[in-house]
Length: 304
Ligand SMILES: [Zn+2]
Image (cartoon, rainbow, N blue to C red; front, top):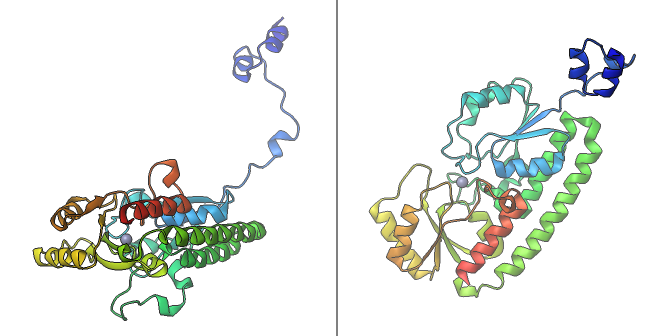
């Protein structure tokens, strides 16, 4: 009678409540659960997107700086210390982007630390002489491809069992980056030559501008947390006029107040949704490729 009830009522919890123990399969107890996947940490969401593409599910990928926050002014949380202690590999951009990271890395006991900008030829890292290093290399897809090589090598070294997968994922991502580069070149070519000039909130666009023949007229904040003086703004307004800049570009991680003030004074437009250090929150902005295509469409629309 009880047995009949048990057969009719399938869920295990109900069977147990009725006092009949389900028969364990003889091999069940000895089957080991899958080992947890190694953890890869990238400092920013943009870099994490490149790591995710190469890892393709074989590692858990996390980023430290939340989407929408600036890596230049980020203040680490206690959870970041814990996360780094568990990581097998940590990817940082380097070249001065993450000044807060070194004290955290003391906690990353078992992690391999990869400085992605070290993958670049030495002569690109000091565009303005030894005193000035601009860390925003990833906005040039040619440099992003070198980051992908470094990610592939690091993942293959911490997880050799999936090295072949990392190699083929990296090759596919670099093919995508070449397609992106060709598309950007064609899009920028649709902007009349005399109108290819940009001023952004901060100096993220130097390498992108250099690659695609856009004049990098300046940035509102030349260094993190340093608001420009009235004289700096006046000089930038004069530059905007002299170079026929058609829009000031602001990023969501900064207040658009100064960009608006500058654009109003120069009598030009303000664009407030350019993404660079951080991805965005919508699906189309959740990958490096999606972010770059959004940005290029935004730039072309504003300058053309
Ligand atoms: Zn930045």
